[in-house]
Length: 190
Image 1 (spheres, rainbow, N blue to C red):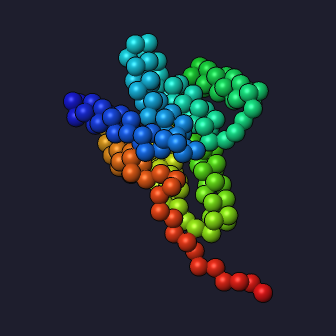
Image 2: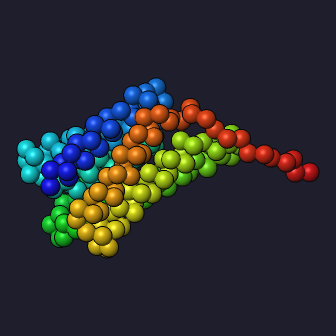
Image 3: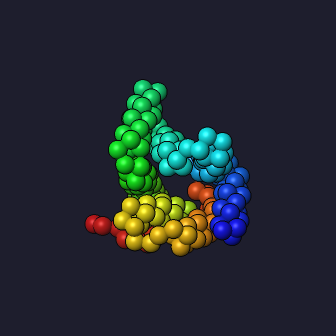
């Protein structure tokens, strides 16, 4: 069980590094929320014995806000809806919190995929940042699907998913939106 804690703490420490690389990019706040969500969730779960999925539901709402420009009313509505859905899921069946988190992860994946496609069309290039970011978000979505369907249980799931998260944390410590892009060959259509 001690190794579980070491891996969790390593992941938290690793994820504190990407916001430094992302500083002064449009994805800084996204990575800042990712970095702080584990720390805040750990503190709140230890101090107040809160279900970690409640905290993650709100952190994913913050991630959505960091990716999309929303006015104050829409931000307020997002957090009110998140709060209501979280309370309903928690009261009805706490396993539904994973479904809620998976839904938010899917929305984030769609937003990032849309931004990737915009970048692809406008700049006619593939950004490795977006490739890694889509892969990361897809892995989070899969993690929640696996949890809900109970395909892999307990520590095995934790070790596998946290290892992937550590790898992505290291990648985003060195890769940002300004990192190398690969131009696509385009032929003129006449």
